[in-house]
Image 1 (cartoon, rainbow, N blue to C red):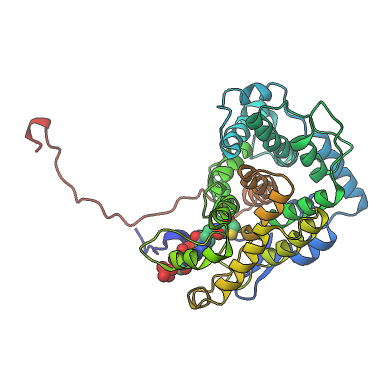
Image 2 (image 1 turned 90 degrees about the horizontal axis):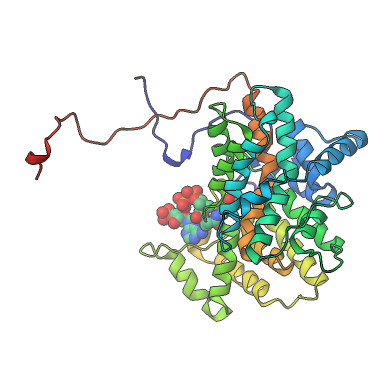
Length: 393
Ligand code: CMC
């Protein structure tokens, strides 16, 4: 059997080698293909970052134009996919709809589902990048009972998402460019994060040769959990529940109490033992968006700032090196834009699709790649003989 190492939660196991994303958790650094996240958030945009993650370098002007055109031209869904939505209950969570609908792409786009064919891989990656925002926005429209809005080629990626979310056939809608820019920055910050649970899931599923749509659907399922991407929705729910700064102490006490399962949502990270650099950018974006909307006195933002301050001065959080993570402020920004809590994780998923496809492509084209097949420490009964029903107690 050889020697097994036991590492639940993969605390110290490198599952692959990758040249996509670098994190230094102690220093609070995050680089995509060598570029600091702060520089990309400031100077780049999401599609350029997606190109960088997938192809390894920033595109030149011609490459960028071609890439943006290709993604823009693939945003429509196969018309029959709209029927697929109608099988869900109206109140289905958008993430439930996304797991199902992205998985269903395997049936609609079979000409790009062979993971062993390099050309098909690239078509699938572009299709996913282009269509997941449409799928996400339509899951919201289905929830609220409004008609699906078709993507518009005249808008950029983030504007188009806002359009599909908020436009109706009844009136003209022009996305606010400042809010679209802020949303694009949220996409950039969430685009990749090396071997997190959902990206590892995509790799594990893809390691068997499964098609890319099935792999990304599995990534969405993994992201949904409140300890991962679901934390943005859970953070907002928590802040609404706390409601007032006078109740922060009570929630901090609960977070420290080992007999209480409550955790401070949006705090802590497996890798960062310092400020999550994405949280710092998100806090700044929060200021900008609230100012733009005339909401500088937003009570939830003030509550979040106060909660952060109190937690960062508390011995428990200091000793355990628990800092705000990306999900702490993102919900406040999205809520201010009019995006409902139930869509927060769906937006995380559409942004992370860039990282998932980049990691999946890296994995399937790697010579090191083998099927993911962890071992276990068996702790069940030793061999015993079958007992006929009449002799069982
Ligand atoms: N509130 C209170 N205590 C916490 C928290 C928290 N948010 N996070 C960690 N701890 C404690 C935990 O109880 C444990 O204490 P002890 O050593 O006494 O048992 C210690 O800190 C280490 O925590 P852990 O659960 O062993 O650490 P982990 O690396 O397995 O978990 C985490 C990381 C992100 C799941 C965890 O910090 C957490 O549950 N945070 C809240 C959920 C959250 O905000 N998730 C978003 C993560 S960032 C976005 C993403 O990439 O998905």
